[in-house]
Image (tube, rainbow, N blue to C red):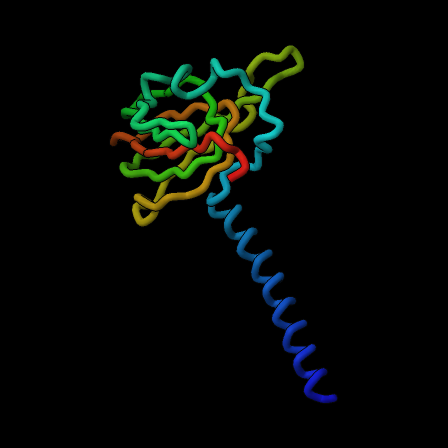
Length: 163
């Protein structure tokens, strides 16, 4: 009888610790930028004209594309601001050359016009270069390179939003 209680307590304790640690990891993931935004891909309502390869083609180069995903190279020179654009699919992004940036997020006002809703200055640590991170679909945004070096990243953007 005591062994049953011991095993039950062990399993219950393990489950509680697992759930606790999972909650901590999600909180840490969100605070460290591993999840950049929480856009529901099923509620995507932005026009294809805002797609990065259409709206910001000077800064986004198509490296590879098939029916499952595409790979983009993004280069923003010092002092440059790329036009407002979106990324419809979930992505893996990794930065290969760093420079401080201003990331501007846009939304719609009451007249359905794009307006700035958030602006963040981001400085990526050198130890975070060349490490892939997941990103959810990105609503309209633009990136301004405010540093002295080229800002360069690669993005694997998935077409199937259920990944």
